[in-house]
Structure formats: structure tokens, C-alpha cells
Amino acid sequence: MPNRKNVIFKGVAVSSGIAIGRVFLLEDDEFCLIHKEIPANAKDAEKKRLDDAIEKTRTELKIIYGKIHDILGESYSHIANVHIMILDDPSFRRDIYKLINDGANAEYAVFKVLDKIIRSFETIKDDYFKERKVDIQDVGKKILGNLLGKQRKNLANLGEDAVVVSHNLTPADTVAIREKLVKGFVTDIGGKTSHTAIMAQGLAIPAIVGLKAISSQARTGDIIILDGDKGEVILNPTLEIVEKYKKEYDEQSVKRKELTKLKDLSAETTDNHKVSIFANIDNPDEVAIILKNGATGIGLYRTEFMYFNRDSMPSEQEHFEKYSKVVKEMSAYPTIIRTVDLGGDKLAKMGLLNIEQEDNPFLGLRAIRLCLKYPKIFIDQLRGILKASVHGKIRLMYPMISGIDELREANEILERVKVDLRKENVEFDEEMEIGVMIEVPSAAMIIDIIAKEVDFVSIGTNDLIQYALAVDRINENVANLYDPLHPAILRFVKQIVNECHKAGINVGMCGEMAGDSYYTPILLGLGLDEFSVSPAKVPTIKRAIRGVSFTDVQKAADEILKCGDKGSIVKILNAINVVAN
Image (tube, rainbow, N blue to C red; front, side):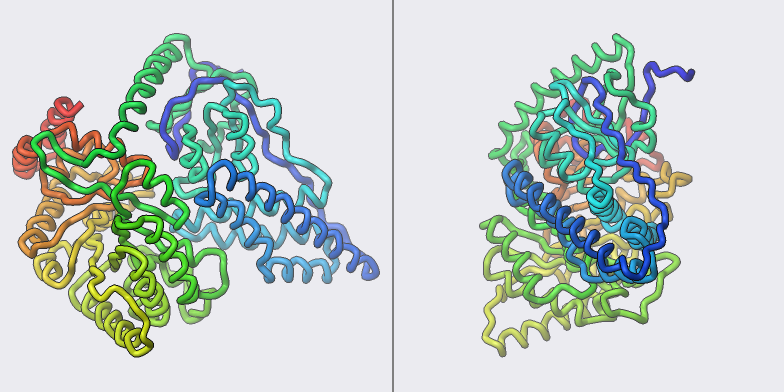
């Protein structure tokens, strides 16, 4: 029998904090699905069975929707609503009916249709869209459970010290977890953009996903430690490790209390240099947590969620309603809306039928390139943004600009949209600021030219680093080469900041580098004006800024820019962080 003491698992940290407790294993649903030939005279009855199961599933999801709304508010209840949307997709039921007409039983037909949809998601590289296959699986299991008369394991017996371990968690599971006030949860699957992750952040429960095999190795009652900062789980730890984590937990509790005191304080260094801390959001329902954590704006509003799980493009009215909701809630704080940043292959099913699967979509027809090739997509979004701009302080940002010609072409389309709106007597903010994301090395190299034609710039480090270093950051064979502290990256940042400041405009950063407090001193020293981070990271970054002298970090940045190797850079940066902490 393998040793089960002190077993360490590595996963994706999605909600910070430490939890120490005992495993409650929520085993995954298992269904035995076989093809049964349905006689012709029983096909209508089989469709009726399917319809009843779908309606029962819809009723259950509406109850879950209500519970999430009551616990977390409107900002998170959309999660269950996405599942209802899947049920309401007419093509979903139509394809199942077709298999039943061909003689398949309802359970097998549901399985086959879901399997086909899920397989199509396997080829998608975009994390947000890839995670949506889990939503489809969740809905499918609910329908199958209702067809077969099976219910998911009850969470009523959860103890107060429980850490839930599961292959995956549904919105219903997370509601039950919140009602029982468990200490944390871990899953085999999932990523940063999964609904499990979003719910964990909203519930402020430590959580780790993507652990691959923990549900097959953990047993109910095992002692477990969850480190939501490192993305690490320890199963059956030694007494010495438990004591170490108890001490760390106590220290974190004190720090969390201290961080809450920073909410209404400015992001200001010890020698009175002020910067801004904004937050990144993926959908309109995250505004509440942004304001709760003390952000003073939205530095990156990703609009891709609007294009998911549908067979037609979002309308101008849909764009307007989503953006208006956010900017009204943000009041006087700015909201930077990034135009759609998707590959054309993902939108092909919405009518762009001449777009085929691309071998390398990261370097293909995506973001601003897609919008310029198919201006109707762009125009509908621009009209929605402009119309919403009368309700708050909107800034518009183009992604993946690689040269000045793309910027000018995008602006020409924007100007034509403005002319049309004026003719229609539609009001919009005539002074709305226009900016670009600098995430392509070619744009960074000509930033002096670009900076003269925009109102602001935001550095997208995730792509800038992987493009500049020729490293696919999700490829485990080379992921170790993805390095925010590479001298070339730091010089890029400094060059961007210098040229933008010469042009009299601010520079923000909305990539993951901005949300890591270890890098905060160097980014401050390089002259960054705005940090845009995940909502949960706002207090931590604010504390890091308030703990250093701007004069000191400027001097350190000057020294770091002279370094040609990472070791020398790390030595200087470590020294600053020791002082800051």
C-alpha cells in the first residue's frame, strides 16, 4: 500500500488563504450509459421523459440561482443562469431529439450530444472558453441524474472543520459549502476562469483547482492543509507541518485585518508619490467586490464573456446594457473597456463561416485584427460603448495593436460610428479617451509614435512576455523560461513608460505581473502610473506601494536596468522587498 503521509499536490490557486481541516470527499456522479433501441411507438414517450428531466433540471437551477443571489448578490447569480441558458439552447434539445428519432434512448442521446459539444471545446486554447466545457458537463449530469432518478451526494453532513475534496464542484455544491461554512475546497479540474474559481473568490473561501488526481487519493476524514497562496495541498501532513501552518494561518488572519483598513487609503508611497490601483473584471457582476476591496477604477473590462454560449453575435443593445450597468455602479470611477479579444475560429459558428481552425490562433486572426477584417462586429460593440459612455467615465482600449496603421484604421472606424450617432441624435461622451494595450513587441518598439496618437496605454505583460521571449507560457516544456524579470522585459517597460510620459499620457499595466506584490517595487521604480489587478489582489498591492519610498525604488530600478542577468536583478529586488515588508 503506498505511503499516504505528507502527500503534496500542486494545482492552480484561485482563492487565497490557508485552511486546515479534515477531508469531506464529494465523490463524482457515475452513470452507466448504454444504448437501448427504442421502438417507433415509444419515441414520443422517450422525448417526454427527456422534456420532463430538462424541466426538472431547470427548476432545480432556478432554486440554485435564487440561493446564490441571496448569499452573494446579483453579482454572482449569473453563474447558475449560464447553466439555464445551456438548457434553453434550441439546438441542444433538437440534436437529442434527432438521436431519439434514430432509435436511441434519452440517456444515451443526451450523453452523445454532450460528448460532441465537449470535444469541440478541447481544441480551444483560450482559458475562459475552455473552462466552459465544465458548465456543459454539469448540466448534462443534472439531466442524466433526473432521467435515471439519481441525486448527487448530500452535503448536509459536512463538519465545521471540513475541506471539501471533489473532482469538480457545481454551483449547487458551492452554495451548500457556503451554507455550511466549510474551511475550503479543492478539485481535480478547473482553472482561474472556471465558475468554481469565481464562486470561491466571491465566498472568500481558500480554494485550489486543477489538482488532477486528489479526489482519487483523498479519503473522508484525512487531515488536509490547503495553501491558497501557493496552490499547494498537503494530505495527512506531519504534526510539525500542521503546527507550522497554524502559525502561518494566525499571521495571515492578522494581515487580513490590517489589509481591510487600507480600503479607503490612497495608493501612496512613504514619500507621497501617488499611483492608481484599478481592477480587472471578466463580466459585469464583479463590480461589488472591486469597490469592496478599494479599487478606484476598472483597468481592464474583458468583454469576451458576451460572445460565449450563443450562435449569434451580441447586439448593439446587449453591449449597451452590459456596459451601462457597470459604469453606473462604478459612478465617478473610470472603466477601461477592452474591445473584443477573441480568435476568429471561436466566432465562426456565429456566421463567419469562412474562418477555419487556425494552427496557431495566438498569432492569428484575433483581437483588433478580427475587428478590422469584420467591422460589423467592431461597429456594434463601439456603438454600445459610446452610447453607454453618457452613464459614466468610460475609456476605450484596443487590444493587440502591432503598429500605427492598425491604430489609425481602428480610429477611422470609431470616427465613422461617432458621425452616425450624431446624425441619429444619440448622445455620447465626445471626450472619451482612447488607448491601446501594448502586448506585441513591435508596438513596444514604436511606442514613441503610438503614444502621440492615444490618450493612455496599458501594458499587457502576459502576451508581451511570451511574444518577446518566444515562450508559450502554458507549455510545461518551456514555461520555466517565461520570466517577467528578464532584462529585455524590464527595458521594454521602461521604454514604454518614458515615451508615454514624454507624450504626456499615463501608463498602466493589466497583466499578471502587476498583480504580484513581489514586482510592485520595480514597477513603481520604472514609473508605472496605474496597476490593474484581480479584485482580490487590490489590498495587497496597495500595502506594497505604501511600504516603500519612491526615491528608493527609482534608484533600485536604475540599478536593475544595468543588470544583464536575472540573479543580479533578483538580489536587488529582494533587498527592496525586505525593507518593504
